[in-house]
Image 1 (cartoon, rainbow, N blue to C red):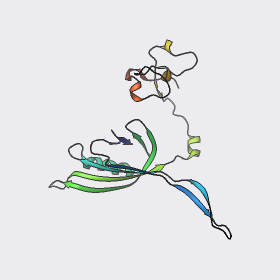
Image 2: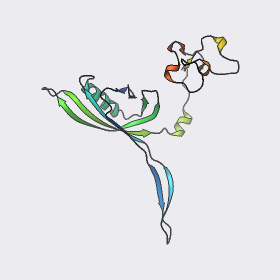
Image 3: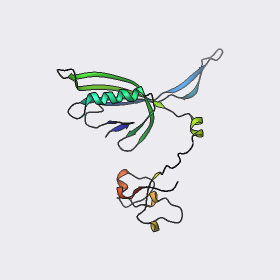
Image 4: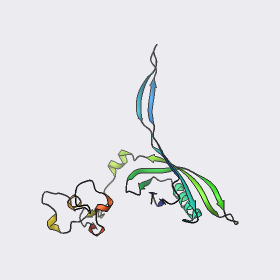
Length: 189
């Protein structure tokens, strides 16, 4: 998987054909008497991402993928964007969907379609986040050490004290460093 936007997965085979990221920086122009205007940085604009996807019947159901994408866009919700390497990019809304049919069946069903998907960054309101209560009864995922004796009394997290597949431990873990057998849901907190 190349990336996932909410429930929609972008597979490596056939898509994306292109990926573009754009950011801008906003400056206000302050007029000055008998001189050139001065610029003052106001803030950063929201990031915009563009994906060009190719869906072909040989590896997916183009009509079903497009229907799912349009249904998610119709909900007008911010969706998490996570890349295949586990990198969380942030939350994005679907700004536009442009579809070009490349190949259709005799009955008009899409065999190959090209989709240009434009996303716009969504930033949570800090006031809303500060008022949000914690989810009661939620057990966060964690990594348990092979035995309780391996967790040091100094308060080192089991996540950081679990030896990796490469033999080293530390805060810079990669997905393959953690054996699946040690991932558990904790009973506390």
